[in-house]
Length: 128
Image 1: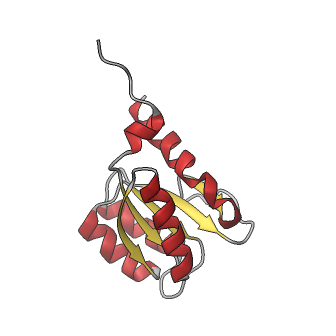
Image 2 (image 1 turned 90 degrees about the horizontal axis):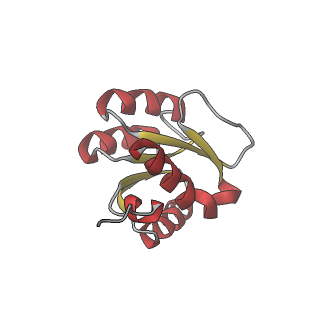
């Protein structure tokens, strides 16, 4: 008799693209997610690179900074949804803008420790 895997087990190996203009934030998020079993397939410094990386890597999740140089989070999300069917986009911001319509969820940067649980919840919702 097989058991239903828990959220963290279902999340293992899911591909994530991390997009933020701050390299330290990208590195922190990547380390946090990899520690929880996610596969960080790329890190992009702006929306333009994020769109190109998402087309190439086809991530399951994109952690997308709300405000970036070159291409905004909203513009990048629109392009990614067209090229990565089924991608989950999490708006990630240091300012208190909540629940943008272009994202599946929102997380404040000061709550980064909650990111793995948020992604695990999204995986579980999709599996249900």
